[in-house]
Image 1 (cartoon, rainbow, N blue to C red):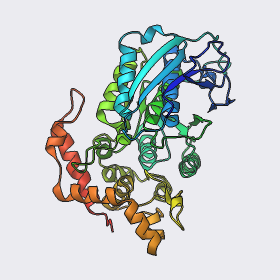
Image 2: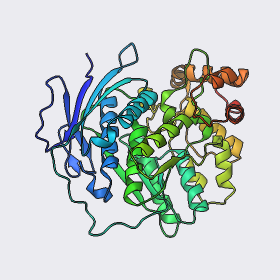
Image 3: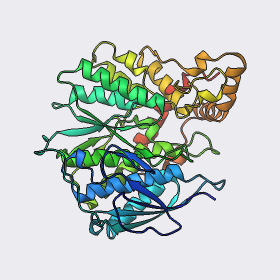
Image 4: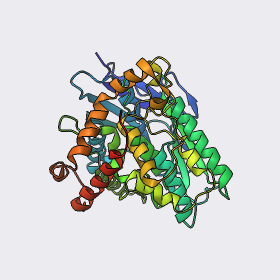
Length: 427
């Protein structure tokens, strides 16, 4: 029977959790308890002076992320998850806010969430800096993926003041390596070197669910907290607009929930929640109207520092990273055949940029390559169906969109994105 009841608190909390709840104790200072590893303490003192509602948003998002990874997904697919979180101040969450974050979690994960907030009995930790850190014009998320890397290049070119970059330090070796590579290259090629805060937060136990669909909320919550501490009015979350649409490629295949992280409806819900909590930061996607190839061409035309496209080839887009399960395979390689990888490959082709990525599909031969093709049969078949049939306007019309969504523009973006996919060899 999978775990479904969880209680999140600081490690120093004296409150007793119900007997049927799995207790997750967040370390008071950077470090590790028997259940949670984090380099930001329970009160987030290392991030600066932060409003309590931003601290509590990180606690809720962090708790949801832990629960998401520690609760196995049953054969019925949908889980009912019970999460209790000790918060600094429950009052801002009474009424609309708690309903908004619960519905946001349902939207992102497809699971039903029961969320309860309790008063934290511990006292706030003193924040680290002797004086407030300088304010910044914007904060931008940087994940180690191709879109966020292109977003960094775009923002460093177009903003009069460089953004403060924030990343969630990933436990996957390939993603962590990509994050470090991008960080190092940006530091070496821009003056002044852009600031980049990598924040580690994960469970100590082995994860029981691989999708981590709630990670996007944690990522945004951390970005919003940093933005609040630095008085930044804008939080950039770069992702190509085509992938963000989360359209089903086949009638029997719903849009992958993992890509709802940057869906237009997600931004609408996140910003509604931030407004309800009176946090003066707006989350936005600078590439919302672009395909992946169009955003890459946009960046290429700004003539970034020499070697930028080589670093692009070292980023990670793959949604699988399961190469180690194949004899002779490698789990640090982009596979080249999942939906995310095909979108990536199509982007390089459409942008006319040399793709230096080493794909697993190009490395494997014989039976090992046949096994990879079989593992990616569902993705390849769905892409082939969608690129042959074209855009399903009925699916767009029936989708969930913000009140001001332009469905004609969304349909056109979908057509342009499918055109890029059509250029990729899936055999």
